[in-house]
Length: 308
Image (cartoon, rainbow, N blue to C red):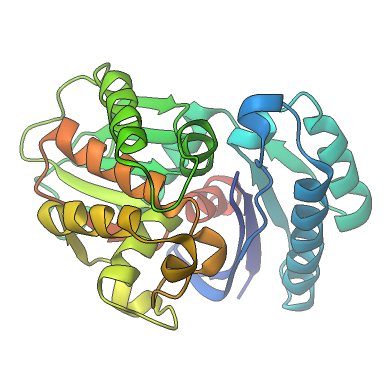
């Protein structure tokens, strides 16, 4: 069977998916990798990609592209999101990736990012309950996307907000434990930002994709090492999320890094991520969030190679 690959270069992490295309057009994963490289460090303030962020990210992209080729991938789709969109020197990174990793990186818009995340979630979560619309939430390092869908899979509303776990950590958080005043400032900013959202569709199901949501579920249930089969499709209740956000914010950074289920490199930004998810559930008046281990990289794979 034909194999294809996608690499998702985010503000906080780089993700690889190599999958085999089945006769019915669906994809079965063969290899999945993730590396936290923090491409977007400092971008919110400087509007430039740091040399350290570019170097670490490029190293991961080179390794992932080589692994994809060695596994038999016929083609590789590579996307970059919020950090690369915002940075004035994004072209420098794109040129380096083309020269050294031999891949062409497409900087996708926030709107397309939202669409691809919805496509991935719809294929996984709409089959069993086709009579209920989905709302998909994608919390990244630099931005957060909301996508409202109809029961037939058509997107009714989508918007990308410039709030993400890395961006808001750099903007609001100065210490760990996170001071109470900074938590409240962050929450107020999120309430003000998300007030622009229209009401969600009736009887919707909320699906959260990307590393913040999967990490929070993993920490809540102490899943270590990470196991996709124990995370994907599970439910994160709002009450448990609120308690977990408080616990994370109350911990010193070194203690937070030791929590089972939490990658040490994500420990400094997980509080902001938890508060973003908490604010989203509050704004949508949702009692729970379903957890998706599949996000943009899956939507990108279908978008680029689904018709081949």
